Image 1 (spheres, rainbow, N blue to C red):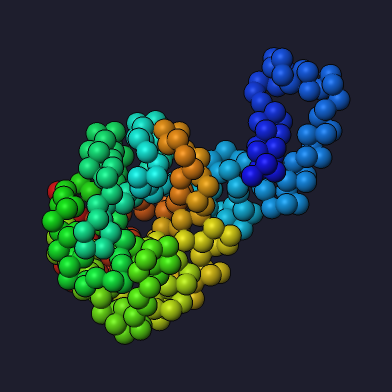
Image 2: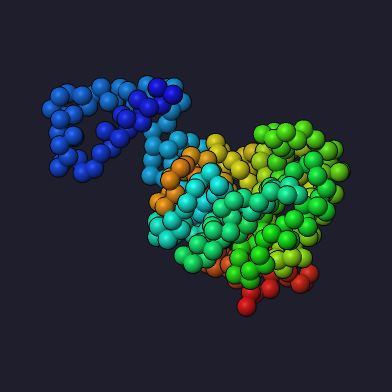
Length: 294
């Protein structure tokens, strides 16, 4: 913790703005401390404490391409506290996914506030449900349908699929059982919202359950040290990429997960209109999905 604080202080001093008019900067230069700061930051890097860049406190070179993608967004839960969605939108965020429900009886205490405020700010928003493995999929589906509004202007809902390592639930169903629960939940979410749900997952759950599974859904993949195609076998056509958990966004106090959409601005407009990855519309359209939202 002390090392992190020292590194953070060094970064603040080194990147103070404006350089030429800053009394602090002049004192650093006049005192010959600039070299010492550089040495300190180099030591931070050797200790795995990366220098901050705009938008990320601990950037990884393996995800550099994500920062160049034109459509950027974030995902939030109660840990982010009160969010200024107007400020986030003005700073270049194009979308936000927010936690709504978990399991069969939990709702994020900030969900309804976030849901209303993001809409008022004109920031496209979608709800995600965190799947647990200690309650029935039918119970979780009923809870999601009861608690999450079916707003026509919302992004497709998201089913968050991970093993529940951080909870008291230690159940870990086999692949066939897990997929059965996943398909039931996806069907219920689609019936409720009229949009094909997005699947969010991490490397472990994908390897154990989703790898090789044929699902029509768009995939949102977590990969904070490499590009998704390097970590997820058979998922080269991902739609969203969660590229850091130490993101910095105007209007959000704590660090926040940052994400990127795979395509161009035109692709994003198409996604907003249809709720589907544009690359899949030709295949999914005949099934009655991907209709332009009125």
